[in-house]
Length: 113
Length: 112
Image (cartoon, rainbow over all chains, first blue to last red; front, side, top):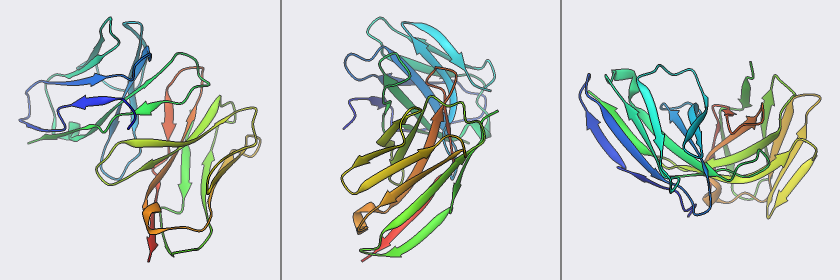
C-alpha cells in the first residue's frame, strides 16, 4: 500500500470523447506526477504539479491537461480521445525535493474504442 | 536527451538462483536512480532509490549499484523466489524534478 489512490480503475471511452482521471496523493505529499504506460512499455512522463501549479511537462499535446487541488489531490483530463490514448495512467506522489522516493498508485486503465 | 535501456527484456530462472538485472542510461547527470517492481496490470512499487552520490543500496535480498561514470546500474536479487516474478523497471531523475525517465523493463519469471 502506497497511500496513493486512483479512480476509476478501468474505463472504456469512444474516440473523440473526454475523460477525467482522479488521484489522491499520500498524506503529506505536495507533488503529483502523471505518467502514461502503453502495453509493454515503460511509463512516459505527462506532467507534474506542485502546490497547484504545473511544474514540468513531457511531450504530450495540450489536450492532456491537469489540475491539483488545495488538498494536493489531482485530476488528469484528456480531450478528443484517440485510439493511441489507450494505456495505463499512473499517478505518483512525493514530497518536494529530488532526493525523495515517489509512490505510485495502482493506475487507471483507459481503453479507447 | 536521456535514454534508459534494460537488458535482458525477459528472464526465466529456476528458484534459488542469484540474478542480475541491468540498466544503462545515456546522460550521467542524474540526480538519482530508482528501481521499481510492477506486477501484471498493477502500479509500480519502489524497491530501491540510489542518490547520485551513492554507489549502492540494499534492502533484504535486493542490492542495487550505481556507476554514474559508465551510465550503468544493476539490481542483484539473491536466492530468487517465485514471488519475485514481476517486471522490474529502472528510472532516472534529471534536472531536479520528478520527471523520471523509465526503461522498458525486464520481465522476470522465477520457476518453482
